[in-house]
Length: 488
Image (tube, rainbow, N blue to C red; front, side, top):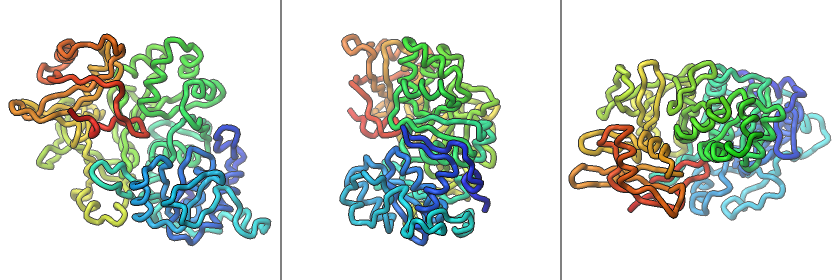
């Protein structure tokens, strides 16, 4: 298999990584990661304490060079979840920044400081290993084990092979016209596909660079996009904060207007925020769709129509179909019929670690069952309407996607945040419930007003029957609304 990072092998002197005042060129990263790779070579599996730091990036690249599967660990994991991940993946050591304090679940493992030289430093053979010092690996060799959110039980470790990383990043090169001249800025966590594989490994595979903000703020976005960065990755929460700030921040609007590509992912970006950003900057945010198990499946193309509310078309090499409730695929895409997304292609994971039962249940004749419900337009654009388990509401004989109702609710001037769920109803089967964070807590819009607002934009049967008011919606580290935490 060709190198995952040709610019490292070529020892390019172009910038590669920058975290605050710490930065490495591709050549310097080759040295740092090569030394660390020599230290961990031969290990069965390693954990990486995935703080948003330069050391995390060096640690993961070192593991990929050495051919050692890496388990990125969320530093915010609770004790029980972390104990499960460590027991399930059984790493033989942990890589962390020198000043990181590790929790008890990891404290018993041998520790290697990220970025430190291998034993015998000073010996050129170990300090700067040759490009051929590490074994040539099969495309099927495991690269990362990324743990899912575990909404229906303990998190499952998705084994991501090297070919999935290469396939996804090369498909995005085509879709986004991504080159070595691009400079990416983001503030995403590094224990997840979005921040780590797309946000760190993506620029490195292209031979470009990434500037990580550490923590998200609009000032950092303005600074980096005004000083050479060409691309911004974010999640909807970040773009919502950008949309809120634009009215009073001309510098931010100018910086975004100068970007080549603004990309949102990990959850649906409300149409209202799309439109506010476009109106203020003249730039449209594009969305893409992926999962831990599949990496990236679809995207709006850089040379395509940036249609708000869609995740674009299937990426190169990815096959995508919609199936009905009986599992039968349908080909007549009419922009209205809801089906479950199934995908297959080189972007897929290999298995759930230690869970052959779950792996088998996830596939149908080689197609991965995503559990995401979508509508496909006649021209191939995909619109996600929600998760099968939490966002598909069956009310009065209709199948209703929560996402389209949420978008309409967010267009109401009295609504700051919105989530829609279904609850059992003796008459309708399920009734539609809207969870609302009012724009003005002292004067929230009434339930009747919101129901009429939805009914005027969508079909009457899609109006919320119940409205509940909150100070904030529960969200995870990626900004996704945790709907299972919403209950009457």
